[in-house]
Length: 339
Ligand SMILES: *[C@@H]1O[C@H](CO)[C@@H](O)[C@H](O)[C@H]1NC(C)=O
Ligand SMILES: *[C@@H]1O[C@H](CO)[C@@H](O)[C@H](O)[C@H]1NC(C)=O
Image (tube, rainbow, N blue to C red; front, side, top):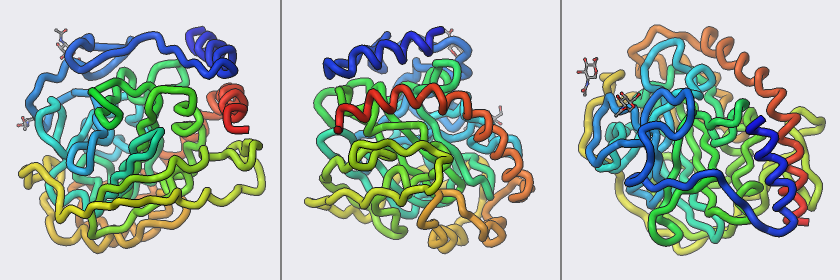
């Protein structure tokens, strides 16, 4: 019921270019839990802790961003299986979250456009508990029951002024690749942070630079909303599948030599050198086509094999069919803004 009310509100207000949300928080005034059934917390303090259950996520700059990842390692921790309980993993200390261990991220590319901030990158994400071989999944604030994936996940950015909650965002994470887009609240946010293309992976949803071995920060154009082609909207599963939009133009790039926080050791992996080369397999279509998982097996402390995680990954994707049908209404409303 909550969900249909929200969609109705979206449909009614789109024409007026207005968007309303039921609650807006800052980290300083967030409740312990912002949604019912939440596993972690939004009262995170200002430290950092590798056992933190903090679900507040920040995307501020190339040296200050987070992604969601599993709270525990192991075979049952694919993104698809843990989407409701992910916790925030951050580059920068001080947000009360876990830290992404130094060296886990081998390439990261921050971009700020008029409508959103985004980080694209590659690395050994088994170091944030993603099982080796996990083709990954998509996280967003609009889960099938109206709560977020993760439930209670709150996303903040200071990229557009003082720190503010962003109510529209989308984050893909696999064992080797990630992307996160956080949209500035406003009429363009639902379409530019569209979340219904959850099997299409990073490269299709957020085309851009996923190269390993560099870290940079650029300005960019907002580009076209994912799935919308000249005013008509493609839905996942329809044939043929259109190619990704071209990567939007970027400029004013500033390169930084590295990113990190001084945390050298992962809780779940002790390997250090071998992961770098594996990131070169970053695929051109889905974040998932990680057929070369054998080469990465040495980086994982868990005994999980790709067969098991592939099977596990399929279930949540199929389960999203209902969500897709409903979300179509929102897309049509959003698409009208760009016609
Ligand atoms: C807040 O939530 C966390 C995570 O479930 C829990 O451990 C903690 O006890 C809660 N704190 C309060 C004050 O309820
Ligand atoms: C996290 O919790 C585990 C299990 O309770 C404990 O063994 C470990 O020392 C904790 N790690 C940190 C960094 O607090």
